[in-house]
Length: 202
Image (cartoon, rainbow, N blue to C red; front, side):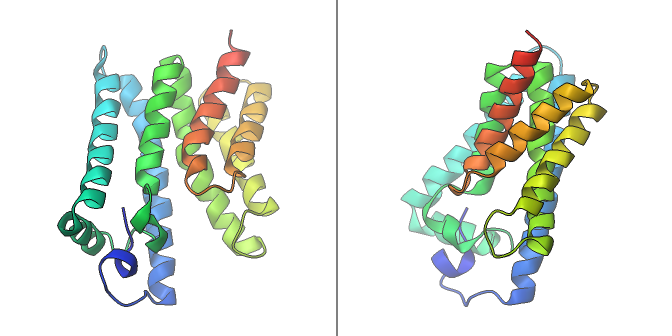
């Protein structure tokens, strides 16, 4: 999903607007953590179908906005206060997150996948919030990674995992979050955390 100035032809966003956009992105990212428990609570294969439908919708919108200038302008206008300008010519963060959630759900036991989704939903916003306030510069910071690890570990403890598993899951989340390729952490965090939880529960 693209930013307004890149695809919509509008003026660059002001500092306060950018800050509000990032706050909204973090809030929505955190809310997405509910998708794991929600999918787990659905009967039968309904959770799988729901996550598959979410990915299909996200990918369909990605294809449509890149293929059609008209759709691209509509998305740019609708997402001006939500999407970053650099997402105009690539995959949006929302889409990469949906893909990460769905792949984790396919690969791992659903209880473990749901926990990995919760971690991915909560840990990255915590890293961004703390990193921007305490870190130096605009890149990844030690403060942000520490917040990511602590949030992930706390989420796993709250999900019923033993302290050692929670600690290793937190380390896995922080390691994946450190990857600098844009959007990669949205896919890598649920996959790496889900992998660690699977290895520890074999």
